[in-house]
Image (cartoon, rainbow, N blue to C red; front, side):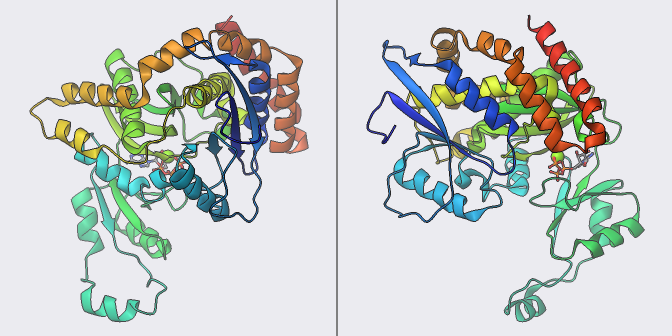
Length: 414
Ligand SMILES: Nc1ncnc2c1ncn2[C@@H]1O[C@H](COP(=O)(O)OP(=O)(O)OP(=O)(O)O)[C@@H](O)[C@H]1O
Ligand SMILES: [Mg+2]
């Protein structure tokens, strides 16, 4: 697979950090999948390759049709390479840095509030410490207005959460119950730019949904437990209405920002869904976090990548904000708006065409994934992953734990 002029051969690139588990799974499944026939009966071959980091000519032609990225959020050499291949070569990216470099948590809150979602009251407060810039002292002296942090907190109401505007991995997140903890947390925030956000108290369910292309898995999440126990294996934990709303919100957010691989967190009270965190455009899908849900995630990542590569789906960097805002500004009620947003999202993701493609060109994938998850190869992968993730004394316990959950998935999907 030397170049992209051969439209029947597709190279899927992987940009990886420290993970080995899902890439090995993905590579193995692409190998096992073999050639895929498109709607016209033409045969397509697919292969994967781990992308290496090296100097690159801005005019070089990449060999990849599609890249799944788990690295560029912290490593800027591949990020700048991704921007080049997005702008110059039309490579399909999960996800494009253009869609999340400027669209972190704060931008996502703004957009979803604009669309009428039930985002808790949120304020942004200026930095605690001076910004490291020679112009800061003059500018701050002239234009920074003194403000009363307690007054802002009173507007938001206690308890509240203080967290970075571009958060991730619980860095700098604290739950604030009174003015004293408020000032302690603000003093500790230093050079981080912080939000104060009203706490959603007494929620019934923390729903975390992983979305890949047009498909979502809504999982019951328990943030207070260790990582391997956070996703509960439970079905039917939301009412039909709340479940549907979580799905619509997840799909809307992804379509709005062009995120095709993302997770979304909502706190649900009765039928009220409050999204609190949904800019995770580099989601963790390791076996040791997802366990029972891992086969779904890897199978769906396979289907969506193959669909995009084989049908030549065009990447879209431009946002259709006006279409979404028109719905937000219409006379429709909340439920009708969600329905309309979901229609726009389904248009963007070509949901129907994708489903047809899965039913015809990829009809064997579910069996392929199941047979592989039941195989010794998969068990080896699981054991290797446990060995590299946990201290030696815990290997037996965790191997048994994850084998049990995978066994349950196999039984439920027999
Ligand atoms: N408004 C809120 N109401 C109630 N709980 C909240 C709220 N905001 C945050 N939390 C709690 O704090 C945790 C971390 O917050 P948040 O998800 O916004 O930060 P993060 O750094 O993006 O974390 P991660 O990357 O692990 O998702 C949430 O999982 C939730 O348990
Ligand atoms: Mg979160």
